[in-house]
Image (cartoon, rainbow, N blue to C red; front, side, top):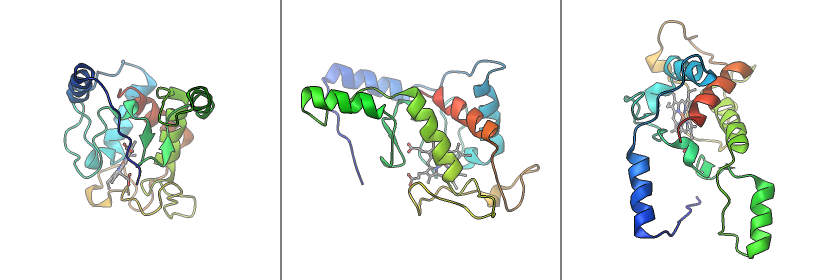
Length: 172
Ligand code: HEC
C-alpha cells in the first residue's frame, strides 16, 4: 500500500480541508457529464459511493465527491499525473517526491480503465475481469438490482464508460 504525504503550510491545509468538505458542483445540462451522472445512479455506483450534493446513500466504497482532485486511484495502482511531465520534473529537481498536478487526460483514461476492469463491469464471457487491483471489493451490486438492470451481467459500452468518466472528471 502506498500513502502519499504532502507537507503544506497551515493556511494551505485549511484551504484544502474546506475544498474537500464542499459539495460537488452541479453538472451542466445536456452535457456528457449529465448523462454520466444518470448512469451513476442507474448502474449501481450510487449504492456504494457517496457524491456530496448529488448522491448520499453509498458508504461501502470511497467518497467520490472530489475524486478528480486525487493524484492516484485505487490505492495508487493508477497514477493520474502525466508520466512524461512527472519524469521531467523529477529529473530537473532530483526529487521523486516533487509532483506535477493531476492530468485530466490521464485521469480520464484511468477512470475508464478502473470502471471497465472492475467487478462492476463484466467481460464478454460474463465474468468480472479485475485487471486493476485484483481482489478489490468493487463489484456489481446485484442485491439492489432495480428495473432495467440485467440480473447477472453489467457490461458498459465505450460510450457509457466515456460518460461515466466525464461525470467523475467534474468532481474536483
Ligand atoms: C459493491 C460496491 C461498489 C459498487 C457497486 C461500485 N463501487 Fe466503485 N469502489 C468500491 C470500492 C470498495 C472501491 C475501493 C476499491 C479499492 O481501491 O480497493 C471503489 C473504488 C472506486 C473508484 C476509485 C476511487 C479512488 O479514490 O481510488 C472509482 C472512481 C469508482 N469506484 C467508481 C465507481 C463507479 C463509476 C461505479 C458504477 C459503475 C462503482 N464505482 C460501483 C465499491 C463499489
